[in-house]
Length: 162
Image (cartoon, rainbow, N blue to C red):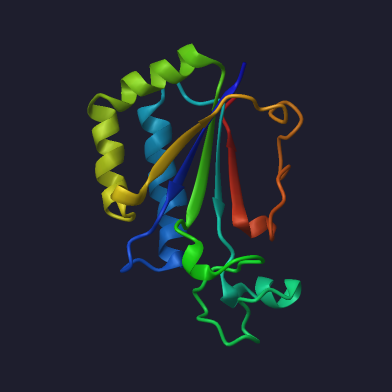
């Protein structure tokens, strides 16, 4: 049964949302792919929260919008408050089964994992990084592209390994 590991990243305050996203896509994800070369996840997906300055809040009538004079870098929320959002990106790695997860954990407990951790420290508040396991993914075989509800295509990147 496929297993999904979900992780939440919170960028450092001195890092802009734009720099965070470009760093994740151009530096961090390639490092992950390199480190997991022998046992790569079946897929890796990153989602970024939409920001007020994108206009998504205006189009959706959200509380956090430029019309509401919100901070341009504030996250767009439909319910709740921007202060409740404690992440800038959500990642999802899908693995074949428990053995596949264990193989990747073995990599993470070695020098490759240390490289990933050190890289994350340059861009994220690692004390706030969370990882969660979701074992049932009925949508994995059905959803290859933008299968999740997103505010725009710009909010997600998707890497298919197989």
